[in-house]
Image (cartoon, rainbow, N blue to C red; front, side):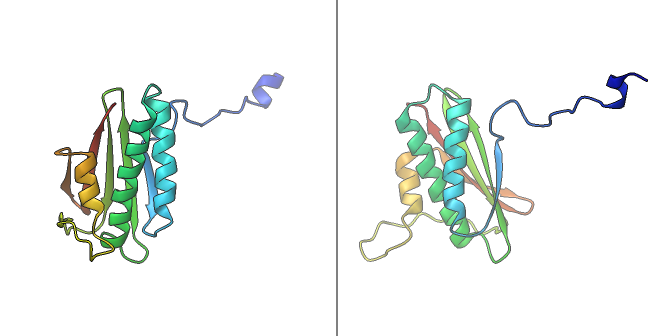
Length: 147
């Protein structure tokens, strides 16, 4: 038996295609920060020519989607999933959570301290966001056009 047969070369199991497109997060407020870092890294890798404005808009959209999901779409011990698809034309962000209740766009109010997330989303992604029912909940998604 040769030395090569006795001690095989270790196989590396790390992906070579950059950051993965999916991130699983706990349904807690700290997850918004992790989601922002995740999408920033993902877009910078998969759409390297994206402008800083595009990347930061995607980060803001993701933060709003995740925050809404944590507040209204998860309970104790629930998880949410962030799915990102970026290219030179647009970046799509989806946030999946286990609650079927759909978010609703509220009119802006100076009296409320919350409830502006979908107003912001609608301003950043006019006509390019929505909700899709899933077997175990829903997906709220948005697309940001490349700038």
